[in-house]
Amino acid sequence: MIRVTDLDAYLASFDGEPGYLDWAAFGPLSPAVRSEAQGDTELLGSGRRTSIDLVADHVREARELVAELIGGDAAQVVLQPSTTYGLMHAIYGLAGGLMLGRGEFPSLTVAATRASEALGSLQLQWLDPVDGMITPDVVREALTDETHAVAVSLVDFRTGYRADLSALRDIIGDRLLIVDAVQGFGMVDADYLAADVVCGHGYKWLRAGRGTGFAWFGDRALERIAPVLSGFRGVEGDLTVDDVPAPAPSAQAFSISGADTLAAARLATALREVADVGVDAIEAELAARASDVMFFADRYEVPVVTPREPERRAGIVTLEPAPQDAAPLAASLANHGLTVTTRAGRIRVAPHVGTGADTLRLFGDALAAFASARVW
Image (cartoon, rainbow, N blue to C red; front, top):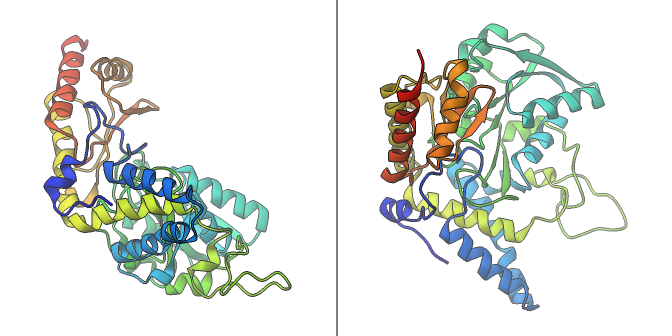
């Protein structure tokens, strides 16, 4: 298996064509992940028990690496098909008041609404700040005695705002803190142990492809969240067919069926790349690339809604041009071969640590062309 051991090798592993600035939507698979997937596919075609078991062992490896990056125990980690699956396990097992932003990614808002409607034991407490950012002050002002849990994105998919998990923990006290970490896991050095549930997915920034989700449940979560969506794999020991045992006391309880071992292989490979380089090194490089994007936006007077402070952002930089400028700017970016996400008049630019000077040059050229044709 290919392994990177330093930042230079990690940067060199970004081998895609210039122009890709959409890592918050999908991360093209790394060479190491592609190589591992191809090799493991051949192993699973052999029919040999040793080969099948070798691939299956990636489940253990992936759980251990997720736990390592969080700072927890592998027994608290369960692999999931996606972030949404992990969040649903957590939310459907809650009772009482759940506080969350109305503008959160639908993985949170839809799961919370469905759980509230279906079970009747969950009361939703919506936050709707003007700028969409769930800051500690917003949460502090909205807390009530009925609030039993708070759900938040580590990095907001619309604005790129990065939540302060430590501050949120101080404010909410003993309540549960559920975190959708898909837009920042492995890219920013967050205080994950301040949370009770951390859910993520490897198909964006980790470059592991679809099906590589995971969830970590801390001790408080394991005590308070009922494993409602628990399947036959959510028990301890071997398969039982004559009775229905109790859910496992570990995070295994929040599993439904067997893990996808090929997906686990891709996730483990991607996580090993991150662990070998170090999250702190990746975070510093990603902050620099986001600053490069902001530099060009400022140069050509395109408003940025993403916070400027490095500790309050990750890799997402959201531009908010004037309404009449949104379409021309999006067109200029597309005409220069750049891939970004355009939604509701905003343009989300998401570089990665391996975004090179050629891509940034294209970005600057696109903004220059747009600015030269802009009518004030």
